[in-house]
Amino acid sequence: MTSAGPSRLRVAASRVLLENWRGSYTVPAGGLYPHQWSWDSAFIAIGLRHLSPRRAQQELDTILSAQWDDGRLPQIVFHSGRDDGYSPGATFWRSAEITGTPPVATAGLIQAPNHALASLLVHESDPQESRRRRFLERAYPRLVRWHDYLREHRAGPDGLARIIHPWESGMDNSTFWDAPLAAIEDSYAESIPRPDLLHADPGHRPSNDEYGKYLYLAARYRAHGCDDSDDAHPFQLEDPAVNALWARSEQALEQIAALIGEDPEPHRERAAEITRALESLWSTELDAYVARDARTGALQQFRTVSGLVPLLVPGLAHAEQLLDQLAGPHFRLGEVAMVPSHDLAAPTFDSARYWRGPSWFNTAWLLAVALNDRGHGAESSALAAHMDELALAQDFPEYVDPYTGEARGTRRFSWTAALSLDLAEREGASR
Ligand code: 2M8
Image (cartoon, rainbow, N blue to C red):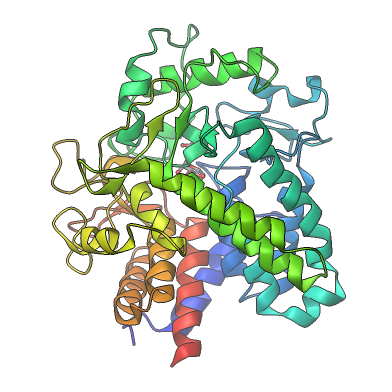
């Protein structure tokens, strides 16, 4: 039992989720992120299901309704059609000028595919209500098209999906992207807007140099009409977490298909294919899954939390090594706050700067679920309890310093509220 206690947490988390609810979707945080983000929405729905399964369904319905004709689910949906102090916003992307885009304004990039997993969990929270509203019947064809998009437009011959921008990984300034970004000589030619710095300490955010590359890559993709057939695109990376979430979501699709009388078999096969392909990201040098530059073949030799996320995937070849790694000197599970985003022992570790060290609640949730699935219930519960305490004590921070547990980034962050609530409810139900 945590000192936070599920009921106090439930009240406080619901307040954050209510405050950030915008009628049909939830913003990650009012000031810093005033729109709907793709993988945030799926994480948020996982928590919302404990407050209102119907609202959780709506959250997913809304993100799925922003699907492009080619099947992609956009990184951001700009429901207001305005920038609202976020950059790059609707005016940068001008999605309405691209054929095959939805009526609502969106970004052209994508984020990691955690939506089928979220849809299944939302269904399971109230199967009767879900069946009555035909939630899965509505979600399934869209989720299939989303995964088809990844297979047809993003997967290379090795079967792994490529991201074409650091933002697509959701771990924007991970060290995985350092060398690929450094190899790009160009940077954004116009002045670089940083409205994010009005809401968060510059030392907790990516640097201006990184933003120059981010905007350059986004502008280049936009200039090509967000068409994936541009082979010369200078950033094409295969990320372990993106592909592990894809594999795990493909398994969720297998279960969803069986629930609604569709054929589960193709999903089972695809999940197995992605799981096999993931093994090519194993670094024998580090005993870790790492990202690979699909253009050069170079493995990016860093231990990051992304490389631990494959623990979520059943049938993984190196699960035992990953469990050792999680408990060992690089991530120190149980000794530091949650799970750091970057190797604590590496010179590149930075306890404050975004995805280069701080501990995040979404990755802690993924690992708590993976530990539990793998029969490490005690470690999973301890991680969940720690996560809930930190979330409640510090007003649901975006991320925390792994050593001090001190809040970093913005506060009243939606997925922190949603996922800590989800773990508290799971722990409560299992007592
Ligand atoms: C962060 O990324 C956005 C760009 O997508 C940003 O920095 O402006 C990341 O933490 C990402 O994982 C998250 O989805 C997004 C919204 O919470 O913020």
